[in-house]
Image 1 (cartoon, rainbow, N blue to C red):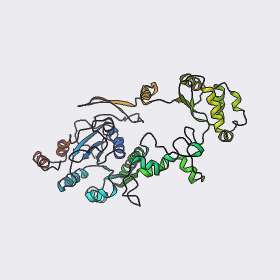
Image 2: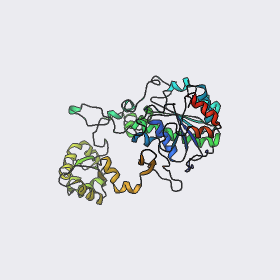
Image 3: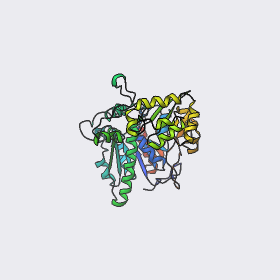
Image 4: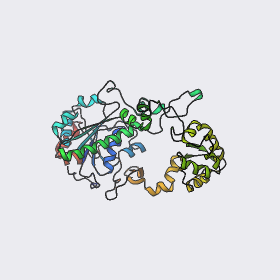
Length: 402
């Protein structure tokens, strides 16, 4: 649907779509951010008091990162007048995203079937912890819970003495982020299909399903090979030698699986005999003797600083790299070259630098147009756009609906 006039002209490949964002915390906002960054007109719908801290401090870095390129409308969906506003918006929109616990949408009367009756072309996306139905559907879902249930924590971390495990979470919210990304992918697929059928549909993703999908080859080791993958620490579980190696001043990553790369590594280390050592001469032998090989490599890498080894190994076409702290990541010349951050001015916070999209299109780029809005900052403008008069808006505000 054509985008209404806004204070910032809609640009980008998704500019013709209007998205209603009823989501909070991380997974839903991550999905919507994929759409807003590529130009979709997003209206963030919040309660009259705003998000109420769901997603952290509104002026904190996390909230600002998740909610850029949106406008904010405050609305009490528990009131009939608020529901009427939502219906008018739905009739003029293309996508709605929510991540309430599954039963909440039905209690509010904003489930897919009821909103589909308002707009059959609506693409309605739901993100949940465990799915929209089933034995765990009503449980509250959080990222770390899904990391544990989805198997990630069982294969992450350093094995303890005698093989004892201490499950370890990933340092980023993997389940939240991937559930949001899969939801965004589903929304785009549904919008493409709508061009053929003329109808919207219900898109569903969950933290648990997304986390299991992200197991990738580790899932296949069990499903196809009957092997329960153990923790492997910093060693790659199947590509050897790939791992973290100590240097004179820190640590580096080296990935030298495959005979050809392994020979190049041995030559670059000044240890060509390692490539013909019967313990390491084949992939199977290197797997069987992983610990001894790691010790042999590290005995050499400890003799020089990290930067020197990276220069030497890269020149020999051996995959390698530093282990950067976050500040070092954004100081890296290649990261700067890729323009992975962009700037925007916030009326209260001043200039902000935010992480951008990791993909580029040659003709229709993404953009960082506006900072995260204050709660209800655009309520009046949005309601005017969908036909409410100034008197009607004043009454809704006086009644606490907006």
